[in-house]
Length: 267
Figure (cartoon, rainbow, N blue to C red):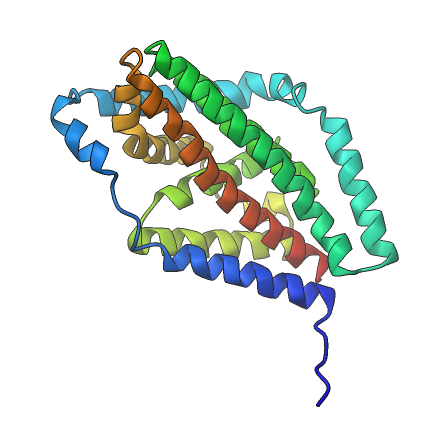
C-alpha cells in the first residue's frame, strides 16, 4: 500500500492543531505555585489594585509612546525583509521547509526575548525592584509579540491589532472554561480577519476595556511574584517568573500568529 504524503499546508495545519490541542488539554492541569500560598498572608490587600493600575498605565504608555523606541531594538525593516524573502521562497516552492522558515524566525526572536526577560527580572530582583519593573516587563512582552507579528507578515500599530495583541497576552493566563472560550473567540477573530479585513474583524473591540482586562489578568498571575521581587536578594526568585510568564505568553502568541498566517495563505 502506498501512503499519500500530505501537502505542505496540510502538514503544517496538522502540526498546529496538535499544539492547540495540547494547550487546551493543559487548561485544567495548571496549579498555583506553592510559593504563592506561602506568601499569601504577607501580601498587602491594596497591592492587587496597585498592580492593576501599574499594568494599565504601562500598556497605555507603550502603545502611545513606546512603539517607536521598541522598533529600534530589532530593526523593523530587517524583520519585514526577512518575511518577504520567506514569502517569495514559498511562492517559488511551497514545501514544509519553506513554510517552516517563518516559524524558525519567530522562534529565534522568541528565544532572545525570553533570555532578556529572565536576566532583567532577576537583575532587578537582586536589587529589590518589583513594581518599577512593570513598565519594562510590559515593554518586553510587547516587543516579543511585535517581532512575532512581523515574522508572520502582520502589523501591530492599529487599535484593532493592539486589541488582538492584548487578547493574545490575556488568554494563556486564564484557566478552565474562561480560557477555552477566549481561545475560541480568538480563532473566530482570526478567521474574520482573513475573510473580511483586520479593521473590520476587530472593529467592535474597546481598547480601554481590553487593556483593563489584560492588566487584571497579569496582576492576578504576578501578584505574589512582584511582591517577592521587591525584597532585595530574595527578589531574584520573583524576577525569574518574568521569564516563566514571558514564555507562556509568547508560546501562545506564536501559535495564534501561525494560525492566522496559515488561514491567510490557504484562502
